[in-house]
Length: 140
Image (cartoon, rainbow, N blue to C red):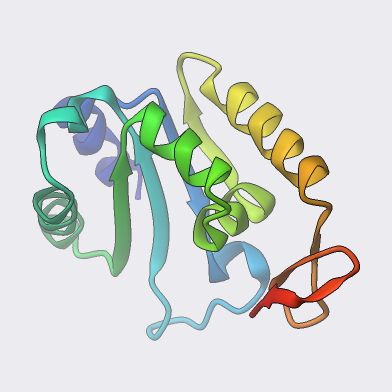
């Protein structure tokens, strides 16, 4: 995986790379599960979402790794936290920072805590999210 990270750095110069998903939640199954990464880089600004995904997939395939890698700009990532994107909230809640060159992770955590407090977000017993005291808005 180290070579994968090096190639991502060479091509995108990310400020932050986050490992998340089953590898950290305890559900990783050898030869079935993939490695889930989020790459935050300003170089994604002029690349549409589909091309980002394809480019990152090609990098993982060159290193013979089963990986699902998503690329976002700083602004996009923070906006998804504000928009209560459950995929991103999980990535922050469970995530492990592999690289963080600009201390962007601190900003991510601060924004996550603000949104968590503002909406009284809580993890459910089934690993979903819910708004405290409002079962109608819970999501699994």
